[in-house]
Amino acid sequence: MGLKERLRQDLTEAIRSRDEITSGTIRMVLTAITNEEVSGKSARELSDAEVITVLSREAKKRREAAEAFDAGARPEKATLERAEGDVIAKYLPDQLSEEELAKMIVDAIAETGASGPAGMGLVMKALSPKIAGRADGATVSAVVKAALA
Image (cartoon, rainbow, N blue to C red; front, side, top):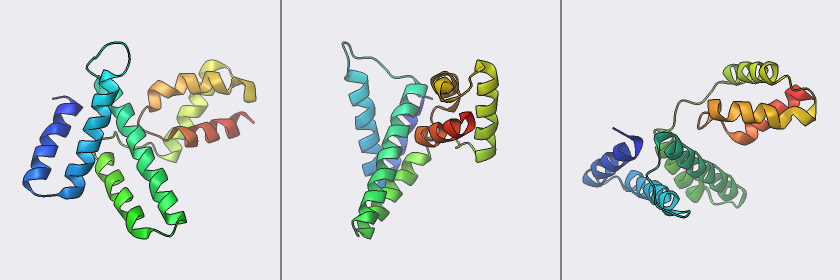
């Protein structure tokens, strides 16, 4: 069963159990997936890896919105955004620990032979497929930049 099908089944369960946060969040995610499928020149079915990319983007939106609501003194809205982020996180692969990420970065630097800030693009290109959905891109970028400096 694909990830999209699992989302649909979980949506049905959430509706039956009257879990408004879960059902609303899954509806938003499925809408984002559908929008991604119909964007471009022709409609297509997304692979699980592409669905994970969409889920990661949606999770990032929730994190950023929660931070903005915290900064704007709207704790009730920030709590809602975090709850939605938690629902989305259930469908994402386990996040990499700092140690795992650091090891992957060291390996990627060795693999590409990159040195200095100019090699950052090479390292990120090598890392991107390995970390997709498992680590925040901004965090990875900052750690790679520090490692190359």
